[in-house]
Image (cartoon, rainbow, N blue to C red):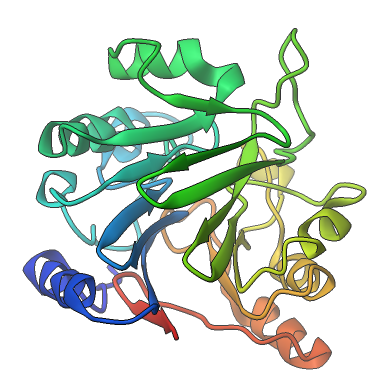
Length: 280
């Protein structure tokens, strides 16, 4: 099994050090799948964390086993310093009760950003007051703990809307200090996507690369080439791939992503689970 660069107490020590660091730097750790921890000036954000074995247990005796490839980076209850957490959509690796319930217990003041279309589902899965999460839809923004979130549609595999026209799958443009980050959640390309992102002057984009294969029987994502090209067309200063090396049946090597990024001159960084990226 793949071992994280940092895990458990070593990761927590690294995060503590960066929380105490002076200046306007942005620090980010990949937690596996589409999960990232972002720290800026002491404020802490979790993007779509999946920090349990809930899917491995759920599918263990089925014809679609979710065999884990990478060791868990940290237990969610150890993250007792989080201000905001996001869920981009309702799939369990982006809305995991076994991650979010202990996380909320450890952080009584935690705020949560979700698609407004998913409010009832989120409340039911987490057993929470439906009014607790902050719901967004396409083009809407909200501020929490110094982070500004702006919602952008994601296509998984289409831009799906509820009966009121609200998006069920979102990406978030996150602004903090002088930094601008785009976390797509799960997505494929759609018309106008790159143009819309380009207007946000993105410093960092976080994109899935596991691709779309019908034989997997799950909704698909960008593949490596598409992710590199989207970042380039969006004018991103840096792109980091994600959503791979978690489950054996639904992964991809980053080789195609790296090759395409090099070919088109797109700056990139490939992280290992538990590894830190600094922007300064």
